[in-house]
Length: 309
Image (cartoon, rainbow, N blue to C red; front, side):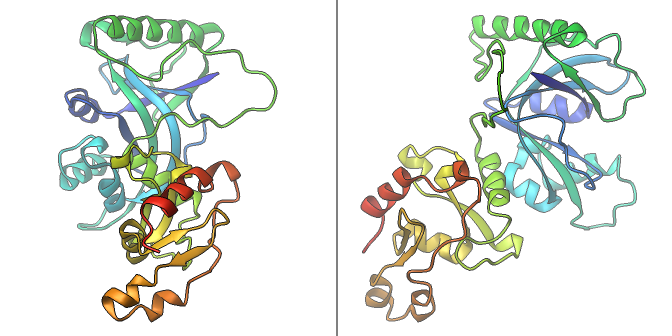
């Protein structure tokens, strides 16, 4: 198992460590030109503060990386970006991106981390002896040997202590031995990560219309979170905002064979709907990875409980 030590904005860490109940964070990268690829889903990403604090101060579990306009990163994660407003977030970013134009909706790298944890000052861990102070972004470690193993053992000791002190830390366990081909196992997602990962799983195209204008696209839950539907990719479909509203209101559904059904009640109730009926029976564009395709269980639930027929 690998882990990554990421050099962390000190104000980002200070802000997030004071927020109660944080279930996910966006560890942003100001450049927005390259995508983070050092970890597999569920592997740990650890926070190392900038100078003069050469310590590991917390971390989270990697779920996904992507590149987004800063406005959409704010819409997806809000204060989980490490700031109390979009303006403050941009101020943090622009410390390391000084040539950004005023009001520019520039792109940033986004590293989505689940079940983050933050250590108290007395529990900070000194950086490994081979972590150079000249490193700007971070360094990957093998957590099963050498400095990486010793670091991970120190992290687990602190997480165990946090649990015993009733400060619950989810998703943390001793790494199991891995054999054979690697398997992608996403950690439990928060709302923002759900939105972003569904968007990328559908290649940033509406599953019905193939619309690619990103601000118009929304990740729809098939079984709503309010009805105990999970933030899992197979409980999501990327839809243009108008189709999302119809889907949530029961005027449209998707069969287990991934075909759209449009309710006749659009015409009955609104004396309209010709545009939407043109899509009736259309086969949806779904992710090529079957693990990310809509679950038949959730689709059946929507057919039986939400769709107006």
